[in-house]
Length: 278
Image (tube, rainbow, N blue to C red; front, side):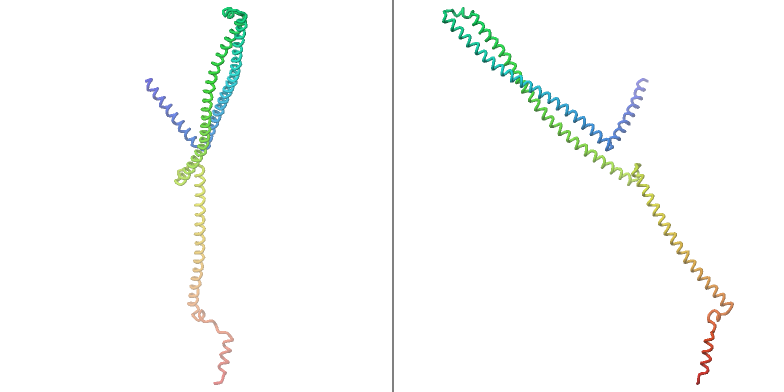
C-alpha cells in the first residue's frame, strides 16, 4: 500500500514537473526572454572574467614581490661573499703577524683575534648557504608562477573569445527565434489556426473586406433593379397609350384617329384651284 501511494505521488510530481518544464521551455521561446537569459549569462561571464583578472593580478603582484626579495637576497649574497673574503684575509694577516712573533700554529689557532675571524667566516658561510638556498627556492617559485601567469593569460584570451561568441550567439539566436516565430504566425494565419492578436486582426480585416464587397454587389443589383423598373414603367405607359388609341378608333372611327381635320387654308386652296382656266 505504501509503495502504491509513493508511486502515485511520484507520478503526480513528475507530471507537475514536466508541465513546469514545458511551460518554462515555451516561455524561453520568446525572443525577449532569450535575450534576457543571454544577457544574464554574459553578465555572469564578464563578472567571472573580472574576478579571474583580479586573481591573475594578485599572482603577478606576488611574483613581483618575490622578484624583489630575490634581488635583495642576491645583493646580500654579494655582500656576505665580500665579508667572508674579508674574514679570510684578516685571519691570514693575523696568523702571519703571530708567526713572525714565533708563536706556534696551534697557539695561533687559539688566538682570540684569529678565532674571531674564523667564527665570522663560518657565520658568513652559514648565512650564505641559507640565502643561496632561498634564492634557489625563489627562482623556482618565480619560474613556476610565471608559467602559470602565461597560462592564465592564454586562458583569459580564450574566455574573451568565448564571450564574444556568446554575444554573437545571442544575436543569432534572437534573430532565429524572431524569424521562426514570424514564419509560424504567417503559416498559422494562412491555415486559419492562429489565435494571436495578429490573426484576429487579419480576420477582421478580411471580414470588413467581404462586407464591403457584399455591399457593393447589393448596390449594383439595386441599381440594375431600378433601371429595369423604369423600363417596365415606360413599356407599360406605351402599351396603355396604344390600347387607348385602339379603343378611340373603335368608338369614333378611323378617320378621326387617322386623318387630321381640314383647315380653312385647305378649303381656300381648293376653290382657287377650281377657278383656274382650263
